[in-house]
Image (tube, rainbow, N blue to C red; front, side, top):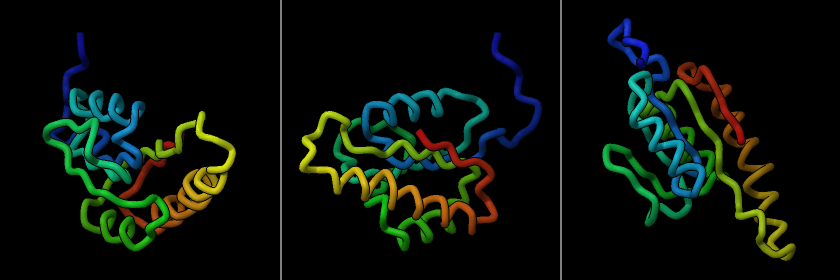
Length: 126
């Protein structure tokens, strides 16, 4: 039996899923949508043409676009950011720069903006 909700505000509040249109992101968003303790769900992904759910707001963008994230976070005020963006691990070694750009620079951008935000209470990185 699922625990009963004790307050009107969901425990997780608004969530932002970065990389929410990939395999892992799709399933995480699906679970957030069915969780009574989750509020509104927003997704940022570089390809929002696939793996979408109803009742989710999607934004196309790069994880390294600090202005996009600063503006979006100020607008939606997420309490949780899930960072699950990453290039496919089986990509050729010639795409090493893409891994650095996403997994290092992108993570730095998200952490910096999350730290500046008064709304963000949790940052989950996979």
